[in-house]
Image (tube, rainbow, N blue to C red; front, side, top):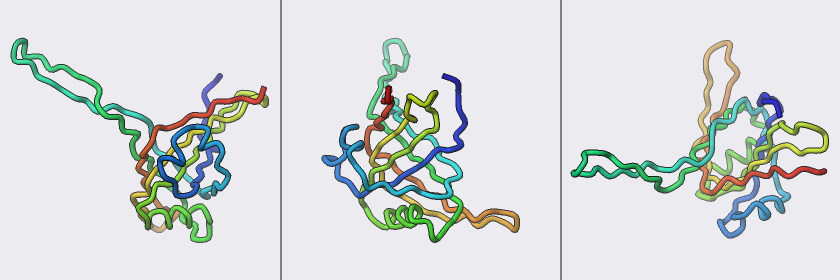
Length: 160
């Protein structure tokens, strides 16, 4: 498959969830209460990275590395500020809580009509919602940071 642009990517917020409600791909796929977030300009990186655990041996003066705890990161979500968009309203409300919410990101990467787009699911906290006003010739933006608190589940199923 050829590479694709991010144009057409969609980001959704779901309901507040506990770990036991959203801990497998099947549980995320069964959810039906997704709200599309409008006017998304960019979706930052997210995905697992292991902490670097080190040990320095006196005998050979070499540092040894091991993989530690996994961290799925912080997804930076930048939107054109739209105070009437129900998705942005939902993310604003989520930032006011200490709850994890279900998230779904859909990439526009289906290679043919017999395949579906790649879908990512995860749990995350909305840690911030900051307005970026800018100058005269700027679009007013709102920047959300979503702290990913689960494994990122990837749905690559196809409809053949």
